[in-house]
Image (tube, rainbow, N blue to C red; front, side, top):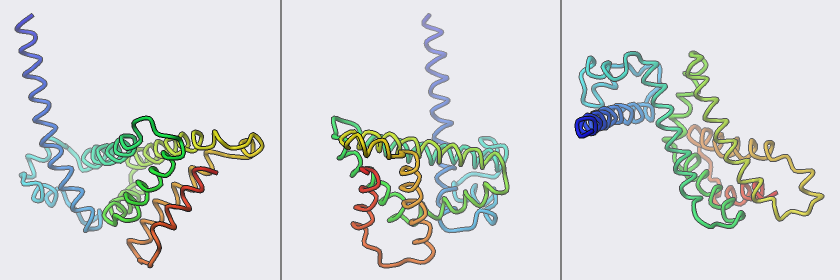
Length: 207
């Protein structure tokens, strides 16, 4: 029993060490995607940015595709986890709608680096089916989270308005607004009032 426990602890420590190494590589890839076109980023570029040899990087990610797939999981999980964490606690449904709108605007609209990474991933997805599958999974999970928020926020609506309310449609509109606004702003910035954008998205969430 003691030996089994010791082996288990050694295994856990090894896995933790591996994950730390992978995180260094994934963070390096993110920095490069924020400032470069994905097609120009080589495995050697990522290795240099992370402080690894090319062989050392390939030990953790045998192919470029493997690295991008894990990067997408890493990035999208962090976005979803952050969003869910700020909604924890005994919050009123309307408060959740407001907080979600503010988080979305901050994450996708006010942070141009996120938009640049997403642009690169979208471009890559049209060349690689496995990348497209992961991208669709994120979009769907993101949409489902918005649907949940919208369904909770509309609990106070009169019954007549509830029947005319399509949560999935409104979730997609909010999703498009937040993500595409960030993409367009990263290309052609305009003096858009952030508070007005937040208010508009809140109105979509609340119906």
